[in-house]
Image 1 (cartoon, protein in one colour):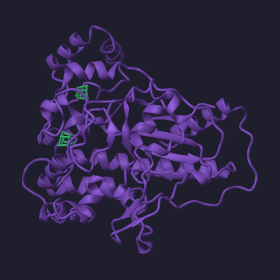
Image 2 (cartoon, helix red, strand yellow):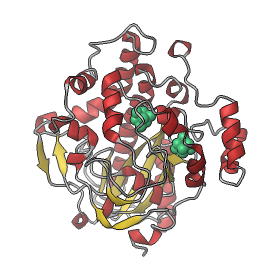
Image 3 (cartoon, rainbow, N blue to C red):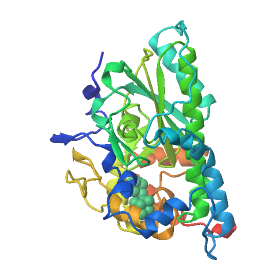
Image 4 (spheres, protein in one colour):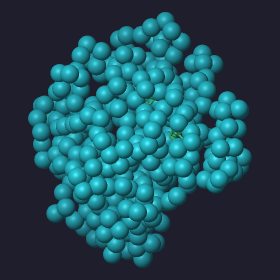
Length: 384
Ligand code: SF4
Ligand code: SF4
């Protein structure tokens, strides 16, 4: 069987000798709970505006009804996250989901590893995934520990190698294309909230399905590990300059989720859409980012803060200035998703053709045409 490192080259990973695993405590949202240099009045207001609608502005996209839509979009995700607050858990964000029935006593026979993998992907799509891929458990992307927002303490990881969860099913959940055109706005953030709510629902259902087949399975959203390297290994996309997963079928407009399982499954291979070469000439996300958090230059191996990974040469986003912008405008941003030429409705053949050409030497022509036709421009919230 392949080891996780065997496909590093196919995945375009440039991992250096000084690589260090990451602790959840240093992830930007967790840091905003304990790091006094990050936590301030604006970050407090940012968090308190989720849940009840208590503050809004007169500006289009930031009115009461815009925040109401955003918070309603997040609500299912919030309910799953808060269900075990009394035990110090925020499931999906600092801890894995636990709303599952027991593993069945007998193991179902789903045929060969390839047949079983095809069945799991088929059911993942039935439960709402835009795409699904499977790869091997890889300790490098697992957080070295958890951080509890509620108790403000570090905790041991829940998913560990001794559990024997050798396969990881990765799902992507598309976010609404039309709402995303209105970002930055509270209205546009509803697109993100719908994505998270659908992700939680799909993950919990897929996890339960695998448990019903007689195999151990644990659903995980933003908690536990870094999703993007897993998704790249599972053949779902490539890393973009904006620091996001650029998927084949929905570009960067996705949320990601994982199910860890001991079910033997065939693994997917990384894909090559030509994203890296396209990002080298594009830079639209870097030019459009309101906080100038996205690099214009070449991939580098230097972290910009403790919230970046050490020992990987890649495009690294300044997550401190990015989050400061979110807090200042009192909702998340996603301009780097809206403007990306890969953010398209690929049900149209002409976008699929352009995507293919973007991976060839004609990429400059595609980039020029994308600008010419005005893709990525902000749609006025009132016209949504
Ligand atoms: S979310 Fe907004 S502020 Fe953050 S990197 Fe993307 S464009 Fe910049
Ligand atoms: S906007 Fe351009 S440079 Fe940025 S991730 Fe998308 S394709 Fe790459």
